[in-house]
Image (cartoon, rainbow, N blue to C red; front, side, top):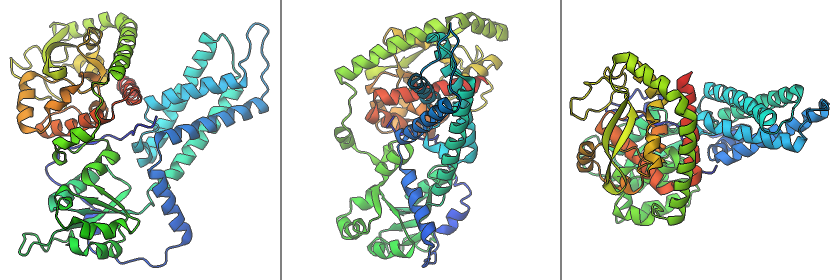
Length: 498
């Protein structure tokens, strides 16, 4: 899958987190003159690994597992009983690779955030390997009516697990040695937004060295230690602070003399990009404050493409119908748990805003007390006291969303899309957030890019962050991205149920 897979983003902080070394990095750093060639190579390799697409990692894993299976078949020649044939090598490679790809998408093995921590690498690799082995055995024994050597399987997955974890740990080390130094061109507020993102776990491969701005005599904060200098001196600042990446804010880019300082930067071999593009590529969201109405003209949105809409509707019907049939036996147990909790109704229906602003009734398993709102729309909060004990489990596993399969089957919703909100909340957010209404260009979804990338919304600022993910989905919506979102939602369900 070539769609970008980003880690979760936590936002809404109003106070800056502890900046640690990044607050000190904006002071002038002495220039290193004699770096070891091996270290320079390792850092350059880290910069390459940062930009690798998920499909590249997927190819590496498939090749590694296929080679391990081939070696296993050679080391342990299979002996098939007369009544149960043994799968051929090419069949084993196909089944095990398919199971590996599905399991790795479910547990997020190819997401960029996986390489940000050794614990994530170990945990997700183990979950992926175990799930892939069980799924492959099920396909071979139940679907194909064949058998496969346990020694071959054990050997293949042992080699894959050792090699896959080893390669990723090596990549983790190289990425953290990449020494990518980021300079922000713009206001102190823009610089602060990058520092907040850094403190929230974003951009781990970057060291934010400071910011440059237009010189304004007598400006408040002119002696700010993070202010490295005037835009006019930008080429000198790049060399002095060993900058590798430059992010330009909207205001400096619109300046009438922008090309005078921008042109020399473009010729230095450093990466130069604007704020909105940088955020879009790095964290999978569109900065709503940095776009204009022209963005919708040049984004090439395909929200009304008939071919894509037909395929999306067909997939919705197939998956929603199958999910309804598979989950139906559990609905009586869920209803019993809700009834035993407080004796209230099992289902909860609300009016929500759908595609093109059309209202519809959304259905959920009830997770809150009967008197949770008393007719008022109230933001959800972490550890919300209104949520019942059963409701907390239903929310954590997303089981409370299952009745919305009916909304999907009747065409009011899609499996994947922006989450629908209530009319009064939508009316309020449209006044406070630019382009909020445009998220209704597509059908709302049971799950979405914002849902797998962000927490439950509890404020206007959270709604802004979710809108930025929703706009990203509008621009990049595709069958591949929908599959990734569905797999990650399945992973959330499995991890929440454990």
